[in-house]
Image (tube, rainbow, N blue to C red):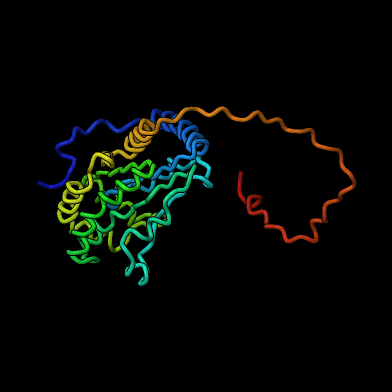
Length: 274
């Protein structure tokens, strides 16, 4: 059976007005949650996985839009270096885990080994099987040490993925999102399905469950994912400190440097029509 959305009820696409209103409310809750994480010294890891063009990146943007980037980091690692290939597989991810008060969002993660690396032959069968054995142990160690680990798999149908690829192909602003690996995934659809199923069998454990996000409707998937994450973290609103702006003191004689002595940016906006 093809890994499509055929067996899943396909609700009507979420209206834009409803989506924008609810997204803004949820983003306000994310701000509250982050402040609680900072105050309590919590450590949060959120993993975003799924097929190419499943909507992971756009969801991460909405999650982080109003968060303080000093305490909320996005991790999207490039291809490992030659040195990193000789390390323990999880090693380069360990140094990116959060310290107290931080949230780390992985735009793809150590699960590359269970997906693209396995399907395209970038790792050996032995390395793949070792990963499937070690990953639950690794994640249990993280959770036992107090890290809040949340894993989301974005599930997109083959029809919707194809449409998104075609859109990227003709859009010069998003053309960079389409790579040869993405194109390869079309022909390897069922290989990726089998790899995902095997990964789920080994790594969907009580300590770190996989949460499936149906993502043919991006608006619906974003609010569903954020709403679910907020229910998984027992945050409470932190009372903001009372602040008051002081009166601006009178001038003590400072004179700004003449603009003619500075290199100003040209007024491009002034050349635009009304």
